[in-house]
Length: 166
Ligand SMILES: [Zn+2]
Ligand SMILES: [Zn+2]
Image (cartoon, rainbow, N blue to C red; front, side, top):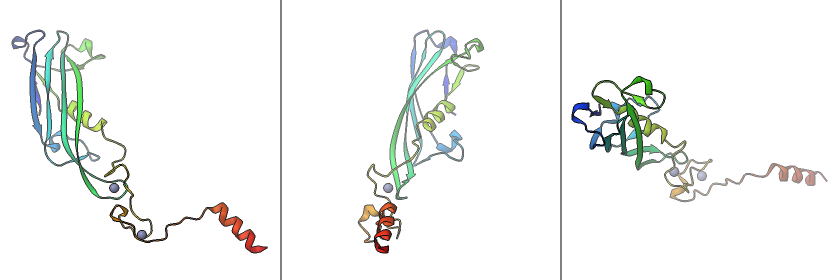
């Protein structure tokens, strides 16, 4: 777990402390739809005592492995996402802030949610990926396959058959 020690006795008002973690993706319990990562997830940031809350700000970086939605090629991409969250110790602030107990703030959920919210609906190996040929299945990024993929316009086809009948 990624824990921040915020024992009040040692943490002055206005003080800010840096933290850094490397976490195995499996430790974040992201569920069955979880993205795949090439290695550890890195988290770095600061925790500040604002008086009412501990403000946790930072950035999560990771190398993501994915399969292109269009051509099914495997790809890898470096991702970086910022997060910011206020943690309060009193339950009276629960509507506004995340509540924590004891002298530690565990940021696993914050990191996991940051990664999941940032997930795109579809992942492409490149923005102009040509995809696969619908006839032979060749990856068209590697060159044309020569298949006839012309799809006739149904309105034109109807007109042609009318003309033929005359
Ligand atoms: Zn692709
Ligand atoms: Zn083809």
